Length: 291
Image (cartoon, rainbow, N blue to C red):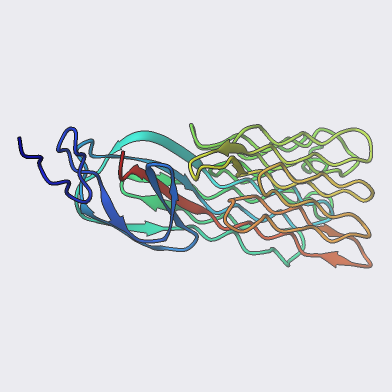
């Protein structure tokens, strides 16, 4: 009895081909290949496996915090992931969204992050943080993958400001302004909403991100940025969110390739601290190549 030859990229038991592809930084996790795109590029399937599917994680760029007397934290980039996503033997253009640029002008909302795209999957950039400026010039948090935290205090009528709204299925809302002390709320994260401003001298923390083991190790991404306060800033959400500013400390940016939101900026008559920039996004694709 003669044995059939074993063909590279095929299963000896079933004869079913496995997927072969190029693009990004390629690593191996057991019987799976993982393509990580930290910047835009092309994912090309040169041989389609019998299952015809991949797993993906698409995280958009996080937003920058607001700049003002008390800027709200930037919202995290939209977070989308799924298994058994059908693909074809072709080239796919990959877009990795940039983080929103630091906002340097006082009394301005943060800049939204940019979208990340793989095939038909688009994750929305995070929503910029709001800003409290001179009385009556406050601004809400912007909408995005996760919403930005509102500016501190309230509007000209004394009504607290709302955080930005999240895209359904991609993240959570930014925190609301709830007091007149000027403390700012945090931006939303993939796993939790931004924390509202408190009635103490503490700003709201950014919402937590979500963990994924798509690369073979658990990594948390898409945390929201913390809000600014004169004394105790809000901490960035786990998953790359930046800390908010205080009177004596600069805000921090969202971490690169996490989609984390940037911390809110702080301004008074003596100093201006630009807001923290948002972190860039990432696209990761995983598929079986042997076994």
